[in-house]
View 1 (cartoon, one colour):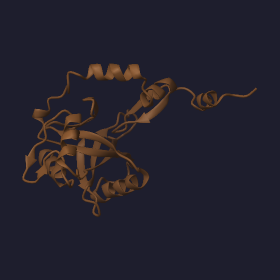
View 2 (view 1 turned 90 degrees about the horizontal axis):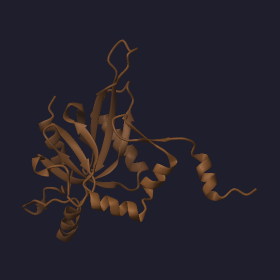
View 3 (view 1 turned 135 degrees about the horizontal axis):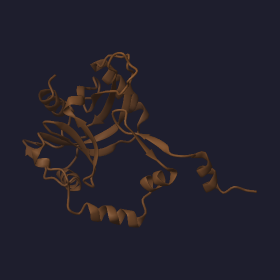
View 4 (view 1 turned 120 degrees about the vertical axis):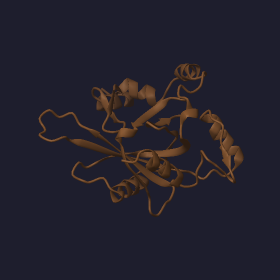
Length: 219
């Protein structure tokens, strides 16, 4: 008997699948849920739009800094390696080689946390200030930068405390025109702030973001 291509794909995916999120967290999803997540139906899109018509559930006016950046990915850092600028740069190089596209997100930096928000106003990730341990940029590309979060692992058998570190890699993007700035700002539901010839929420380099994080979260 011939097996249809759809059944062949279904046969390869057995049971729940794990998708990596951030800081060692995992999201367990079934095959059907993964398909729905990647290929939403028209009805699901309408429901999503309806749920988000009221706008962001986060008060962005309380953010110290916010910027539209590209998210390249997250890399779990080896436990035996000490978190350093060199380690961050290694993660940036690796993801720049592996990832050809990036996901645009709004990074909102608050006194107590960093939020990543998509254009539907949905919070994708949250990095508490207490877990932000390091940040740095690429030496050969001033637009790429990494934020390291470190959290304590629950391990009753370990004699000493065990910590897990993750490097989250992003990049800023030069926006060519004011029309494009306004279009992206509208998509993320905020009013852009113009300072001199630049917009604060669309930095040309990672420097303003890194400076804000280093100032707020000094250890």
